[in-house]
Amino acid sequence: DGELCLSRSLVNSSDKIIRKAGSSIFQRSVEGWKINSSLVLEIRKNILRFLDAERDVSVVKSSFKPGDVIHYVLDRRRTLNISQDLHSLLPEVSPMKNRRFKTCAVVGNSGILLDSECGKEIDSHDFVIRCNLAPVVEFAADVGTKSDFITMNPSVVQRAFGGFRNESDREKFVHRLSMLNDSVLWIPAFMVKGGEKHVEWVNALILKNKLKVRTAYPSLRLIHAVRGYWLTNKVPIKRPSTGLLMYTLATRFCDEIHLYGFWPFPKDLNGKAVKYHYYDDLKYRYFSNASPHRMPLEFKTLNVLHNRGALKLTTGKCV
Ligand code: CTP
Image 1 (cartoon, rainbow, N blue to C red):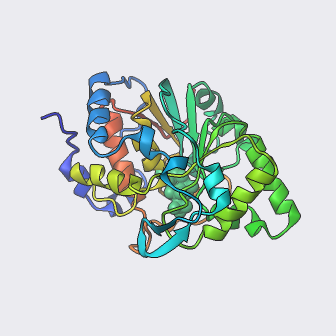
Image 2: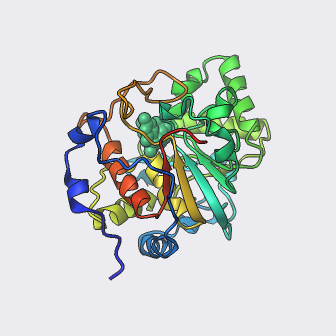
């Protein structure tokens, strides 16, 4: 009935299989890859049954007023106040309203990008989505620099900008955001308690420095809807990773989606070590059950979709 049917055996197979370098279940070949436009349309239609990315990509100003209290999406017992600053940064209308692109890149943060020379190819796409304010300038040859849409988990403030303890951390952050011009900065502020201070500081810096960046804060239903879609397709993901969320949203706007920097494994197919992130020393955490994400399972799923022409997954060099 047109449902996206992922191979059950692939999805159910143990994540352990994937840890073995040299595993042959990956079809790495990008040569000869062809888009399957009818499958792309079918996936878009099916995802639309669960969410409409145009709407769910961000709440809008009229959804709240300052002082409103909302429950965190993944921690319903805890609440958050919609501050004056946050309210003033909510978009009037969806930043993705009526935006359509022929080709899009979704750039994950795996170290597989190092030495890939994919920068030019990534930048040649009509719309480039990146995750967690990953740095680009120093890695331009491998990752490119174009960023039309970039995500920022609140934890990034601590991880990459010293928790804004010093003036120099704040300056570095403001500089990074000013490079984005009027791109979309997507901040999942309503997921779990813990990052509210960071989100407030970020909002205050954006307002104080009159940054042009277009802030977006995902709707309260987005994550459940994305999970619902993948669950219905037999991909049991507890909490979708940012990269999978971005692919799912992009199906609404993009006719051809190219993924780079997705490789949640510590070794490449030749057994060579791969950094978890291309730009820092964060370690792999995703093989324990304690981790919120199931990136290896997500990867397997994306690989199935690559083989069927629904998306193009590049894990090697761009030539
Ligand atoms: N990714 C990957 N392989 C890696 C690292 C990242 O496939 N070795 C992909 C994942 O889809 C991930 C995205 O790139 O979501 C962005 O990476 P990161 O910033 O680490 O993602 P988050 O999902 O936001 O991770 P966390 O929740 O730990 O902050």
